[in-house]
Length: 208
Image (cartoon, rainbow, N blue to C red):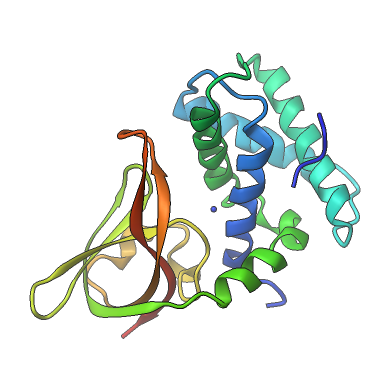
């Protein structure tokens, strides 16, 4: 498979690039729908494989190659079925694998973070304050924020954002918190509707 292109760097800062890298890698190999258990197993095997390798993490291409090889090893060891047909479904599966991996082995991806974080930091953000009503995991992790006026906002947690670190292990701890969230408007692919939808995406959060 060809190399491919979800401080010191914080654990959270690595998430966005990991998810992006996994999406790009898997978009050329996956076709069949996998179960949550298979996705978790594949993420763990890929992390274990990477942890056992001697990798120069200052060399971006070396990290990309190792990631791709370890992912392929995991697919083979789990006997997962793959094909090259449905690009949308393949990209979505890559996102799911990446989301699981970021909680298992984020430190191995430091070299992949810088470009994505620099790009996101330059984007114009809006801001909203209120109380977190709910945190739900559907197509994406979604924070429901209610302003004092009663107006509700659905804000997606897709990539790392400043202020999210303490909630990484259990995002639902945010429920009931008073927060200010900066967000940008992004088009994201929604699995159920099979279309791109413009949604609010969190880029920074302050807990009051």
